[in-house]
Length: 330
Image 1 (cartoon, rainbow, N blue to C red):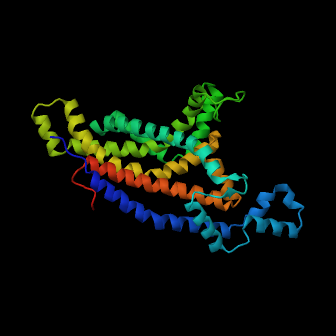
Image 2: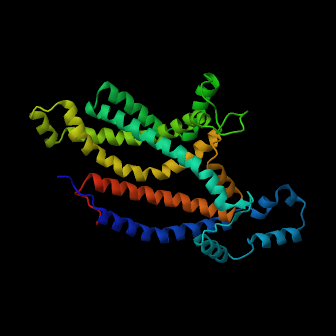
């Protein structure tokens, strides 16, 4: 008899998490404005550019008033928050465009890169983890584990530069960056796919060690459990034992890793996007931070925080579905 999915319990957990996320997001946005207030960067001079070097103090003060940065911190934060709740994220002072338009234009490319990289990390990590976990201490296990531990300490931007040097400059088989070819004025599927290969592989490989090590440990421990030994004693094939018993038990710990890797995935994506000139939110984030662009910086920070909270919720839901003993009401 098939087990019914506990939709009600899942909905209750999702509702509780949504309510708990509200004060977190409020605190994060307030912290963004507080940090920006203490920043040595002057948003007025960043907005004025070179013209600000020769502008009079009176003109700078007028520009400061027009931008609203002369008001108290809490006033600016509250005005931004109440407007954001109505869907108005304000205007980016540096990019001189609506914040919603900037995010909408760039978010899709960041999601494409992160999703592809996550798929690469999970697929390769699971495959290598299962193969290594079957025979811990073997040649494959020692070799892949050594590479995984090395990759754990390798920064994503360093892997990106190394990939550009080898695949783009030395072999010339893949483009070094961007979204399309230099001479192209249109975005085509083929060009995007070719330009996506290197940044997605670099970002995915930077996340792979954790998935590999979790699956390797989980599968290896599951193969030593009594139910698996009993299955072998009953004459079941090694493939059936591995896929029907050990793999399911061994994969459970990895489900909790999905959510915990989201912050690292976001950080890595920012570095990889910068190295490969990928037109995602990385450039906007850097510009907003260095120019103290309050509306854009707050919106991007809320977006990143929401992604982390959703990742944690997703991992808990997946774990509850995979292991009924855990449940959703705890």
